[in-house]
Length: 81
Image 1 (cartoon, one colour):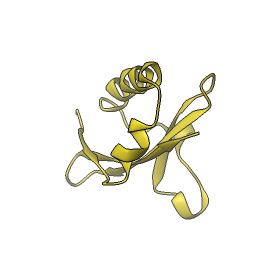
Image 2 (tube, rainbow, N blue to C red):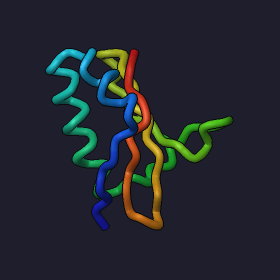
Image 3 (cartoon, rainbow, N blue to C red):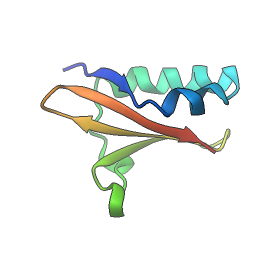
């Protein structure tokens, strides 16, 4: 099942601060995640236990997203270094 993507209002401003090549790398990762967003090793813990991450280790960037299985959508919350 392919999930749709929704964006938190603060996410766009944070994304615009990033280099275009990093944005492109994040897009490639997101293309894979929309097909299978439930990746156990990417699940966060603590207060963000219902969120997942996408990391670009070389760039030092992490994107945090939350799943809504009822609406089959991914909410992009934040991205940054």
